[in-house]
Length: 277
Image 1: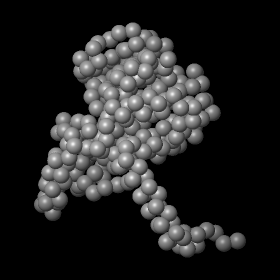
Image 2 (image 1 turned 45 degrees about the vertical axis):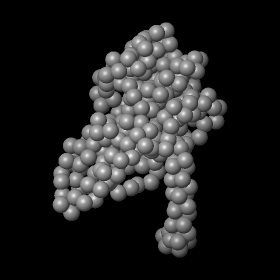
Image 3 (image 1 turned 30 degrees about the vertical axis):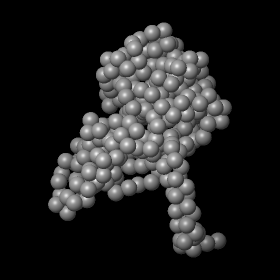
Image 4 (image 1 turned 90 degrees about the horizontal axis):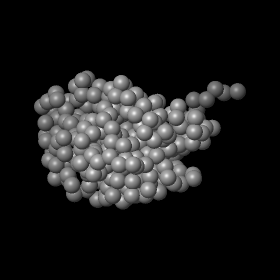
């Protein structure tokens, strides 16, 4: 039996992961800004479920949730950094305030939660940190520059963290899901730029229309994703990078090919920059 700590567990990936972990016989600390949503979805607290209020953008909330989690279950074996949302829109149309809110949630929130969990995992000399990034953290796309930046940030952080924590028996995996059939594209989850610029008007309108049309039509199955996370946490040698869904796999392969082609095309320039003996 493992003890899981899941952020953003009131719906979407977080809720499905909490449900799958419980079904597998584990203990789960499920957290969200609205604790009641978790209780309603998972039929309340019981001996293996602890539903907690947690706003990842508030360090005092993070500290309080961790204290209560340890008091309840004594340890944390798996941390799932899932809480987040998508700030979309052309870069110039996204205000400084919107940019800051995106990073407060998707980046600093992940950092703060992990920071308070790590002392427990180091004492245990075991643990697994699973951070839900996105294909946007592997490959940038027009109209998502700020969201991509936030996901690239946690991707690079995860790679470095995996090396730092390996001596303590703590594993790190960054997961890059493609489009899954969650509420991610609902207007309650996604944000658009708040600085309208005429030059981007047609692009922005077409992108909103396309995303709205794709909402709840995505190819990925959130329940299968959740089951895969439970299996991942039981793996003795989990990967640092994991593509989510067929779209995630395609993005991985396309990125690998693009990097290889770019490196070969510019090889002469690259190697010419070394100091000559």
